Image 1 (tube, rainbow, N blue to C red):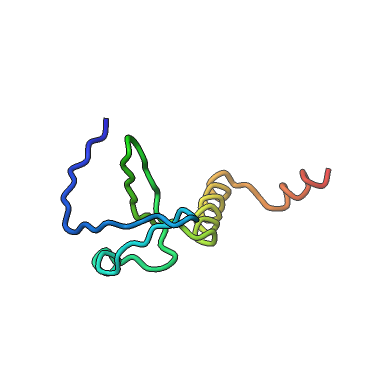
Image 2 (image 1 turned 90 degrees about the horizontal axis):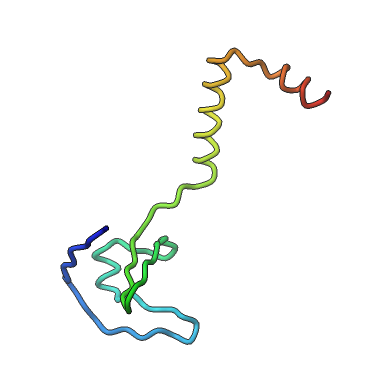
Length: 90
């Protein structure tokens, strides 16, 4: 079971809009270095919401990582590109 220790450095009452949007106060955005486009995961239970800032990797970075892994595996297994092309075309 996860437990959280909550230390409140700043609190302010905010109101949700009809679109479900909540404004994070400017002072808090500056303190936490939150900008437009920042991604969060949101947790909710028993009337409490918790937002956690997360870094979502870019598709290019994920592709590069997979490509590097695949290239290293192919080299280790001595797989050749032409063999795969023959299999695909047969």
